[in-house]
Image 1 (cartoon, rainbow, N blue to C red):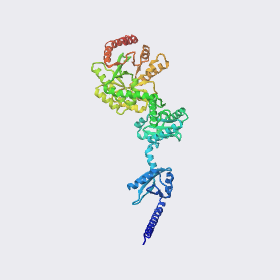
Image 2: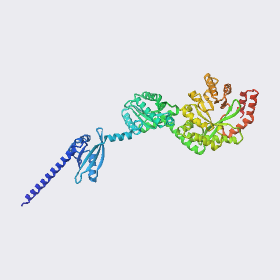
Image 3: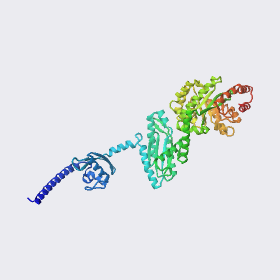
Amino acid sequence: MSGSLKNLIAANEALKTEISQRVSDLEHTRSIARISEENPNPVLRISSAGEILYANKPSHILLAYWHAEDGGCLPEDWCASVAESLRAKKTEERELRCAGRWFSLTLQPVVDSDYVNIYGRDITERKEAEDQIVNYDDLTGLPNRALFQDRLNQVLNLAQRSGKLAAVHLVDLDHFKEVNETMGREAGDQLLQGISGRLLECVRTSDTVARLGGDEFGIIQVEPADTDGVSVMAQKLLKCLKDPFEIDGRKVYSGASIGITVFPDDAKDSEDVLRNADLALHNGKGDDRGSYRFYVAQMNEEIQRRRSIEDDMRESLENGDFVLYYQPKLNINSNRITGMEALVRWNHPENGFMSPADFIPVAERSKLIIPLGEWVLQEACSYNKGLLDAGLDPVKVAVNLSPVQFRSEGIVNSVKSILDETGLDPNLLELEITESLAMQNADMSIELCGALADHGVSLSIDDFGTGYSSLSYLKKFPVQRIKIDKSFVDDINSDESSGVIARAVTTLGHAFDMEITAEGVETEDQFCCLRAMDCDEIQGYYFSRPLPASELEAFLRIFEDTWGLKLRQERRQGSSDRRNVTRLRSTI
């Protein structure tokens, strides 16, 4: 047999073998196809080169996304995944979102072959459920902070490209904590749900309302016409939250404060947007609750100043740079010093004495007012006990409680502990709260004041007449003293309404069996007018400026040994107190 014939026979056999293999492969493919076509999910076979050897009908949604067809090739990144799966002989899992659906695609190498089968599974419902968990608040159903930030980035990018405005309103509830504390967490949750509903009613469908955490909400206002349109939105939000909510048969009020930033003018990225809105929010809350405030660039300088003061305050609390001054109070009827108010002063190591108006608001915002307030209370009680031990007549020391300190957990136990530690008689401590603080959640304030009074501590309401006290509530407070605000004392002789208010406060207080103290008394005319109104006590520069602890003891001794005795003698003889108090003021 010639060599050519042998080669021809061999080629023929090889051809038969190849045809047989192809027939076998075709039958295998048809078998898979019959099974795959019955499968409602995508099934594909891909060669090592990324060629699409087979795709069932449900796979066409994927082919359309890939811009491919039967016999074509997958995109480059998917070809690489197929090649890697074959090389490693390892099943790979990938997820793909197309045409509004999510698919999980399993790349499974076929043993002893150079192709991969891809089995798809529609996981849209699972992904949407996961998205709901990850991106939405469980309680309110609103977008959470993560989704809010994602949408904010999209709106910010759009605003930068189009040049059109957008705004973020950061909404913080004013009294939510008090609702939680007095009515319970379930009531607080109901309030948050009610607030969410009202906020949604105030916005358009293109806007976003999100719960950012706790009692803070964020609103993205898309394409307002101008800043006036932003203001209108803020006013609308405040108005919708002003009306009471019905919770467990009770009316619950919860106003809000809003900080606003407009972009792309104010910020270039989402972090700056939120930071600026937060600056505006806290700047507004510090001045007046229930209002809205726009971010302005100067707030950055202000926040840096506050942070510097806060850092210095922390260090000064450790180093003992704070001191107390005491302003004596004169009882007009007995001509005795029966009280003194403790006033904190900060001797800054670099700047000297700083005005309380500069550091007290910073202490309030940062909660440093709590350790500072405890130090003031400890120091004042200890000093007053020292005066008693030195043989001086007992006087009450008055200490102001800030709103943050008054509402802080454990304030009653803290006061009791300090009294026990210093040994001061509770009757010689007077705690002052402002009228506006007393009326914020009046029921809670009455309860706290009652708990303090149970320990023998006296209570007074400061700045009286500047707020909106309800007489029905005022008579429920276990308060022994009302202080007429300095603003009414200043004009008591020149402004008829100030005189009427001062007289009304005095009459009201006496009707409730309370003593009346006028603060900020600076002139003889003011003193005489207050005495004519039967005011009980005066405090101010007319009688004495605030004195450092080192001078107060001497002042008390001189007054009691000389002028106090003389004043009382002359009072019994009918002499003029005006002349004697003036003389006293000029010599002590």
